[in-house]
Length: 251
Image (cartoon, rainbow, N blue to C red; front, top):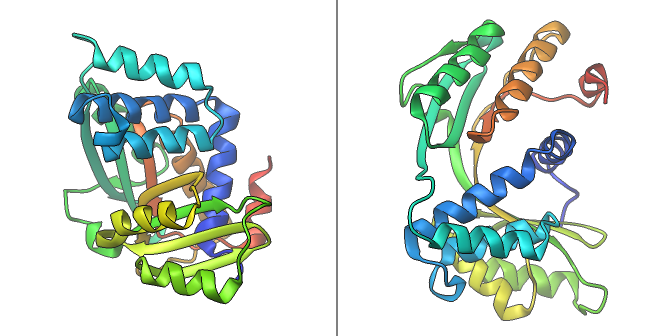
């Protein structure tokens, strides 16, 4: 079991930014809303809702906030969100893939186009960058103090559940799976008594682009602006992130 991956470090920084802006709860609640509209308010019969609630709890969304969101989405009327994706490029051809949930596609197109063009990027067509990324499942778990395990045995159990990579640092566990094994890993974790504080399908780049410091700052500002939009759920890119460059961004 290795230390945390580059993806974990990027994700950690993203999580801190989302919390600072007060946007993370909004995105988690929106996913709950969409899951209820799609397959009903019962988590036992709705895997997407069960996962959305699990992720919300993992980010400390209050229980009553989650319950209100489920009840509101289960009622008549209300917002109807659709999934929308955008692809483009940034400095030196860095690939960008933006996943959105929106109730106003015109607004979302306008916002995403503005953010990308403001930092000298280009909005592309569907499929223009998708091939650069591979869809993977990522599970982030904080192992409870009373959970007894041997590292080698736990790794074998997780591999049996479809894990491609298992990374353990202290009590922090990260599991990477193929997209098609995402559901199998959820079942395996339930079977062995572990609950993920976050579980998502993400896009991992097959290659990375190294940027000069000024290009890195420019690209980072673009990502920050995109993530600041309520309609944007996730932003993926293949920018190389160096520890020395992270300090250029400040807090």
